[in-house]
Image (cartoon, rainbow, N blue to C red):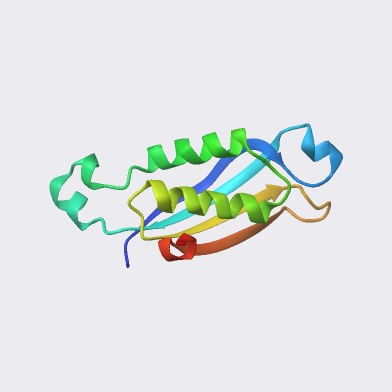
Length: 122
């Protein structure tokens, strides 16, 4: 799949972390998505029904992050990938979740994964 829909630097506030202060106060979570899909039908029809609706995807991701309270970024990044692949017409996804300012001398710390539907089957 050559076609990609990109969502860059989606900033959401949520609970993620193992330290006590991270469990009570929402923090910035930066999310980047690469959605692999065939855009050729939408390119011809010019109809949103034939496209991956990135607004719907980002709204769903925001909802999940705001409602969850995972201890590990590993869990959050995997959940986001699973939701996108299960609920939207995307064949493969790359999800990066970062916590800006998580380490004193680093701009951010994060995890990036690449998944397909087959990774969540069974």
